[in-house]
Length: 239
Length: 90
Image (tube, rainbow over all chains, first blue to last red; front, side, top):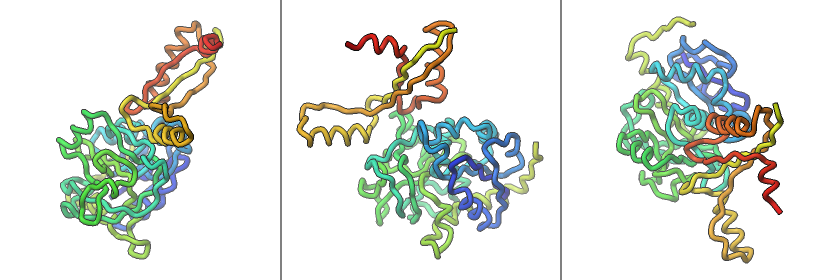
């Protein structure tokens, strides 16, 4: 897998994503937010966490207008896999590649801790190496992770099974106590209908090594990397 | 071209949980204002804009709201000439 890690001013998880790709045998490269025409040769595009443009206006709102985002939208519309983590998820929502929005945590506090996630979809490019209902220990670090959308959108997410990860307690139940930010139905991560764009607030790239507390993020990156092996070589010409 | 001072009000959509408004609501109650029914926190953007007319200045700012300044999922917006707003105050 060749993965592009898009870096914005204020991104701070870009190296973590880079290392996560290398960890599963992939090759990563940073793509600066002003670069155009540089994504076509990659298998996957990763949008990192951080505080692009200081979260001014709304989290992700200004990054979404970066030159590179036109390429990210085109890459996604052509079926290319795009993963947004934390600020990357916020940018994907602002860009309209995923529905809804991430607003201020209901607690009004920044939430930085390990949470438990339940995997509700294991038939995606990003999650097929997990087991259905598997519980993961993954860190979160955000002030605006409260997933909101209009009622019709929320009902559609549930009806079509587009929720991939939820915040749960130790027995896998979606309780209010297990919800760190007030997200509707404990939503932690969603995917688009086409199945190639996923956004999540928790940081799987920070759960890659036992020394650092958890290895539960590894299967997300092995899922993505092996998707390409299974699909045959995906060598695209650079534009 | 004339320079028009604009005031752009961005507020959370009705029905959306507004944690900041809720916290302020609670604080006002505990400070002895029990009659406060509802508090919502938005933002105001002050902008000076060169335009042919007041109408075109407002129309341009509304386009900016749709493109960048407001998120239609969570926010409503209203654009007004700042002079008109100030003139309306006693």
